[in-house]
Length: 251
Image 1 (tube, rainbow, N blue to C red):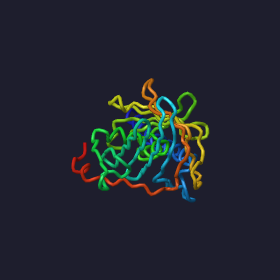
Image 2 (image 1 turned 60 degrees about the horizontal axis):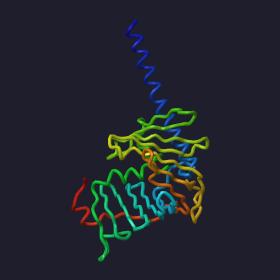
Image 3 (image 1 turned 90 degrees about the horizontal axis):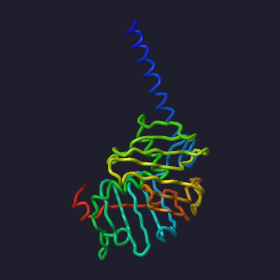
Image 4 (image 1 turned 120 degrees about the vertical axis):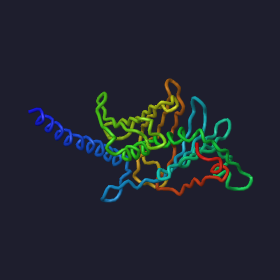
């Protein structure tokens, strides 16, 4: 009798586990579709690169321009406040540029920042589109649940951030409204909120983009950005690693 009970339990578990995985992946795809990431009759995610521009008035006034490639993955954040800072990550390399593309043209510089790789990749994966792509990559390890009446997806981020757990919260329209991350490193503990989704690209692509982005760590506001323009038509953005950055090696 006990062996029969154990066999039934094993069969039940085998049947239930794939259902949960399928539910999570369906929820992720529905969220991707709600943002306009899925194209063609086959509903394929064809969003690989994007750019967006915005401004922050507080806590510190600044202008903000981000270029992203989810394929590499890579991201360049060009921020001008009291001074200009250009921070780049490409794969497992990170560096600062004196100008966009710095270090590749005479008279410009690229300063290696190997310790910043994980923090900068985290910025890429917590964007609404990056978070959903990371959830897809998590496969059966992505789980879906209901929390405070909202749908939430939990999963681990891709390497080298596999020790960071992300939770993506969706609204009633299945749009990403919150991405929360937790890791052993306190710097990995972030909460990003997204609202006021619109298609504001110069060439309309039907991709909805959050026009208000707030990022916090604990009680500190790191970013409060109003997005004014996007290019979501897979723009040509490149992130070649300068020789001096590559020679310095990976972290």
